[in-house]
Amino acid sequence: PARMSLHIGAFALLIDDYDRAIAYYTGTLGFELREDSPRENGKRWVLVAPPGAQTAILLAKAANEIQQACIGKQTGGRVGYFLHTDDFERDHALFLKRGVHFCEQPRHEVYGSVAVFEDLYGNRWDLLQLNP
Image (cartoon, rainbow, N blue to C red; front, top):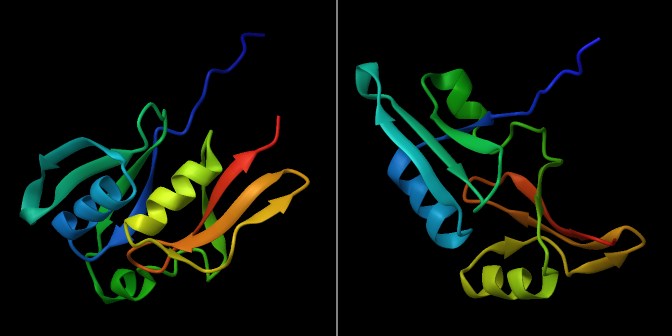
């Protein structure tokens, strides 16, 4: 049988304001703005991603009270996003300089170097450099 060729194109992250989110993900985390297209009813299709990444994040503005209540809590308070780097020390220092809030000191584990940080909304991320 033919081998399936699948990849995750994007995943949605609930936000409160398009421009504020774009500024954070592009300015603070250094992601690229891949698309910002208008949609009906004032909505926008906004995709950001780390440079060279295949998977993007759809910055989805919360449309109702239920969605608003989930901003920053989409993974129930656990780390839900994993940002891989090829130079942990460089990117950790850069993120600190740009005001990223780290929840812990860097750890050097069997699998690699890691530190948990929170994004603009309180979503928890691992900054992670895996060992070869």
